[in-house]
Amino acid sequence: GGGAWSPLVELPLPGVYDVAWAPTGDGSGLNLAVACADGSLRTFRVRGAEEGAGPDGPSCCAPVSEPCQVLEDAILTHVAWGALGPCGLAATGQDGSVCHVEAAREGAGAVVLARRQAHEMEAWSVEVPLGSEHLVLSGADDARLLGWDLRAPPEAPAALENRRSH
Image 1 (spheres, one colour):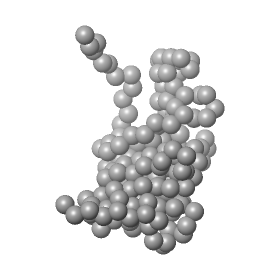
Image 2 (tube, rainbow, N blue to C red):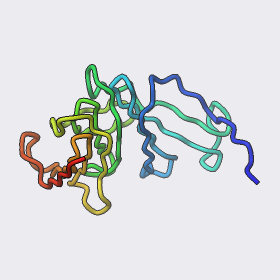
Image 3 (cartoon, rainbow, N blue to C red):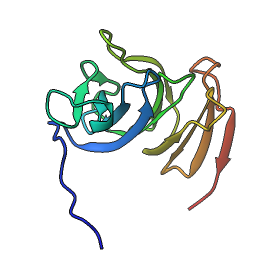
């Protein structure tokens, strides 16, 4: 049978559209990126009992820095780790944009490195393929799958385009 789930920690956040987990790289837990309804990206360091009890009990979830306002007046709909390295994030927005963000590090906030107005409609998915950290794939209600080479300038056309009609 299934056991009951109980919350380990509650965080005061605006609406949450997506979360993405990544190892910290230093063995101190996991990084959690959260795409929020207010257009912000928030990053947290999460430790469980196996990493040592935190100040809040057996699990600890602490913000790495202040929220990064990725989009103004639009929802951040999806986020993925691995864009140009372990500290890079790709995020999509309700406004059709695709953003490249460098994650917050201790003492420094996250920074938006590039923004592409990628889609004509709401973008709902983003992924960084394993082994291709320079490539970001995005999909949206405009029925387009686009691939972006992060090494190219933000105004460059998509490196890959696949369009299907509804």
